[in-house]
Length: 175
Image 1 (cartoon, rainbow, N blue to C red):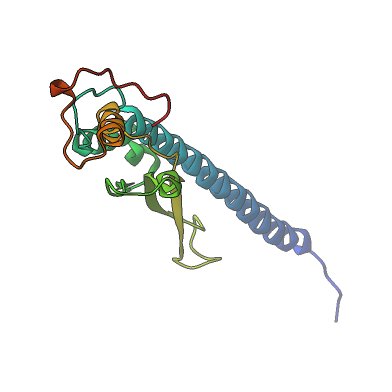
Image 2: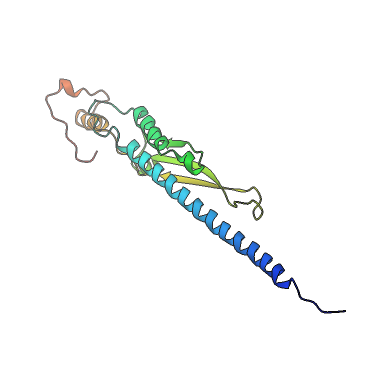
């Protein structure tokens, strides 16, 4: 029997090539997942900023409606058009209640959940997806109207407060 090694380098090249291409695709897909995550984080952060500051200058007494702020934050998030990156996510808002305590204001903001494929080809991890979440809980200050209501109630020591019927100027430096 003759020991012939013709074609051995071709087989080694094919195995090495498949391994190298798989490694390159894995790194490329991981890079795309990182970039997609950063884009979602930025969109979530910008929508959270909008939500937190939309009505901070609202001077209406006893105003505290967050409906416009929530809708505006969702519009800001939608304007980023994340579907270009293959991300189908909807912004969720953790707006709390009007009666939240001082420590709970830190957990008010926005978040988005989305999925990304781990593996481009689907041969290494199968069809498994990464479950990712982007959070932006920056805390929300009460509106000026809510601050005025609190200051007025502290001055009058009563549940009903109407600053229009009182001869005072309400000012608080930090509600």
